Amino acid sequence: MEGECRAPQARSSALPAGGGGGESPGSDAPLPGSSGSSALLQAEVLDLDEDEDDLEVFSKDASLMDMNSFSPMMPTSPLSMINQVKFEDEPDLKDLFITVDEPESHVTTIETFITYRIITKTSRGEFDSSEFEVRRRYQDFLWLKERLEEAHPTLIIPPLPEKFIVKGMVERFNDDFIETRRKALHKFLNRIADHPTLTFNEDFKVFLTAQAWELSSHKKQGPGLLSRMGQTVRAVALSMRGVKSRPEEFMEMNNFIEIFSQKINLIDKISQRIYKEEREYFDEMKEYGPIHILWSASEEDLADTLKGVASCIDKCCKATEKRMSGLSEALLPVVHEYVLYSEMLMGVMKRRDQIQAELDSKVEALTSKKADTDLLTEEIGKLEDKVECANNALKADWERWKQNMQNDVKSAFTDIAEENIHYYEQCLATWESFLTSQTDLHLEEASEDKS
Image 1 (cartoon, rainbow, N blue to C red):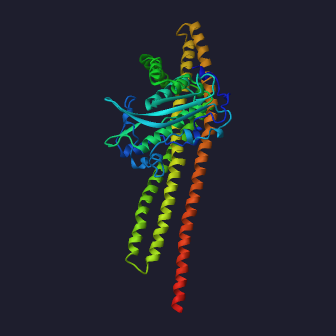
Image 2 (image 1 turned 90 degrees about the vertical axis):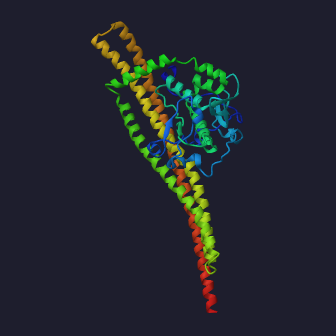
Image 3 (image 1 turned 180 degrees about the horizontal axis):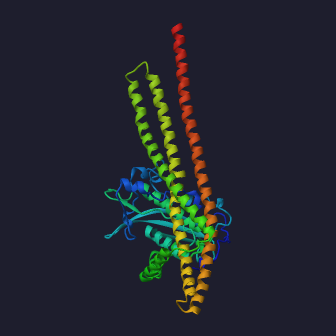
């Protein structure tokens, strides 16, 4: 819990130019999977437990599948990103560079699962080397997220992509899914690396540096099952009690989260529906052009006009494909990530309330003198410090998160606006050129008739 009692601080120690190995969190927009009521309406989706990573597949519901992971412009063969990153462009103070790449399938007699290579380059003194290479599977990322939440209950932990399986899927692992998952995991780790407190978490360091057997051993050192169950039961009991007097600033924060969650979920749902309809439009356009070519073969007088229409449709079809790629890579992943963030924020608020509720229950017991007064007074003093640390951590992280959210969303919508302008300008120029050619042809025919 020591991470809770300090507000985020700036990191020191800069990495020399050319010594890094990853991207900044905002540079690789992931799609963290597909979820929501719309997915459950059209596909039978089952949650998987930690030991069933071999079946990690996002919902193939049509309204959700046509996102980042199924963009026609997305490369289907994930390649190493190490050589694509210009480390000299990174901020001077960045001293931890992480890359997630080279997914690899593993087949055993018990299960089939995917691991991802993680390369870490750093100049920090607490690392015993400047470069590490390990392989991790999804459940390792899940373990890291859980440990971060345990150590820093009122810090905003970056979300992981959801874990779903659709019954009846023939191919459990395809290139699109794996590439989408890779991008999401890459962003998850870089979000943590950029966080002024989480980046120094010991479990995060172990995750980046330990070999598989070392990580497995480290996991066993965590809280036992009975201990975790006891903590969960106590947390549920406290949450049932609720808090008597949540501070005003946290009331405002909670109200913001509720409104934000409603709006971002609605935008996510509508954006996915728009993308689905855009893809259907694109598929129809691909068939529309060739029809005019076939028609032109039997209409000699209309041949040039029909071929001109076919050419325009083909150009607009390519422009549409490019716009869909921009939508799936620039907007949908960002919106869906913040859907996941909204769920994470609700969990953070609940954990803050649980800490305060524990303090309230001790104060109430002291007031009614139901237990040893001296012991209660000591416990109350410790809990007051705990509540203050939790509140300060959340307040500092809250402002940081809001600023990042606003920057990410603004950038995403600006990119889409520019993409739309370019798309419509291309299509307009294409059809205007066609009209001009038809006008010129009509004038030529009229001139020939007069002569």
